[in-house]
Image (cartoon, rainbow, N blue to C red):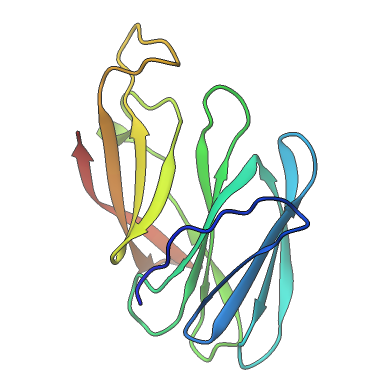
Length: 176
């Protein structure tokens, strides 16, 4: 199994649990308004890993577990959507390291260049085969927030090693 169907995090009282390759991640968030605290607990690793707590701006809108680099170790992808009319998307991700004793952050690069042209938020994310896909409507000059007219852009990312963690590297940009 390379990816799992998105699982929604509904409320702090109902944490989302996702598992792959014997490792389980439990994701919850608490708080009101746009500032919330995200908590990630990991179980099934060789040594206990302390819970990760971090502030996020927005709400958790999806959680997936996958092994995008096919190294036999799972990664966690938490999709966050900001409050407001733009509903800008962001990602909190972690990869289990060799030896299953620690996890390392996954970085999603900022949109830039042609991929960022016409971007005004409204992102959705999904694991598709061995890629992370990010989709959003394209806005043309004069478009209102409710009526983008430029179609949809999808950016596909592959997971690659980085200097101090993992990077999601854009490998394909499609427009529909």
